[in-house]
Length: 406
Image 1: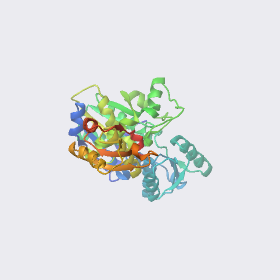
Image 2: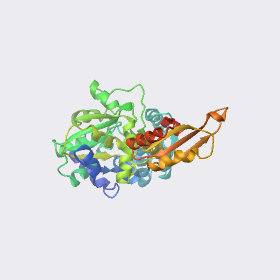
Image 3: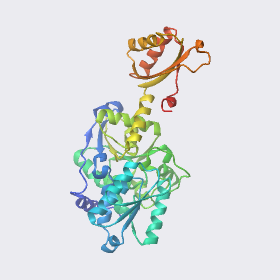
Image 4: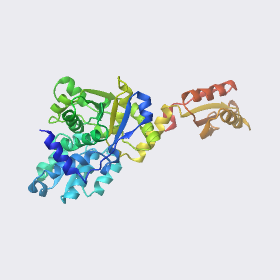
């Protein structure tokens, strides 16, 4: 069972191993949602995520015989790095099975901590089946990523740090994948102060815990579809599920598009990189139906590859009207491009890219196509530029954002 004594033991074990990530007050997010918002930056944790807490505590509790057999686990990335780091510190061998879709930075970091990596399956659940198979075939000790009370107890030490920095916390927002983090955080929070509300946050495309709570038992989703790979779990943990039932007060589900906006908010206003799973609690702030509360958003990790970052930034800027593309047909004669650019400059638009296509028509006398990608201040400014071009009798057509990335 997860008890106050086991949480104290975990806190003692993790001293000098896991970093104490102090709360960061966010004036920007506080003003936006009408609450006092504090960020718990586990993206700044050792290995870049909270998972080191549960992995290290679990390994510390193993017998010598269990360690000598070697360790095996499955993970979409963060637990993998936690186990690899903890195994190296304990001087034992570790094998990690990761989905083939795992971002390369998480694969490379796991290898860098000394673990053997096996890529298998498209989802976490498929990787977990392979890890359990290896454990049985080779006699290795399986380290569960979330469906384990010792692991969940280690994760729950986050709550001690939240209460230390903010004793009068009212609400804690916690990401949910398999449920280990949420179970640990919520259980300790309720033990320390039963009046604190704990709200779990899941991606809408992988809301297995919400479905399980509604059914009253653990259920398996037929499929999952989310950019939040760290919480893309079809089946939540049955061992931690009773703790979720008892201690989680509500669950909010978040669409992937909202995570794109959250990435821009955190990157621009706090200069931090937070992976999509960790951004769930940022997106959830706009769904809260209360005000003037002290709210802590747990940012569970920051292990994101640069390709994903680039994609999120571009799509986020398009969504907010800060980048857009239009096309216009022009007569094929000198000076026409200058006329268009002059209007854009007058309206304070910033040209990012120009494409001048003389071959759009067989008969060039019918015109050539100019495609322009601009930086603007937002949707209102975007519309202002379009209207200014129309006023000069340019036949302007907005181009679908998807074309920008083709």
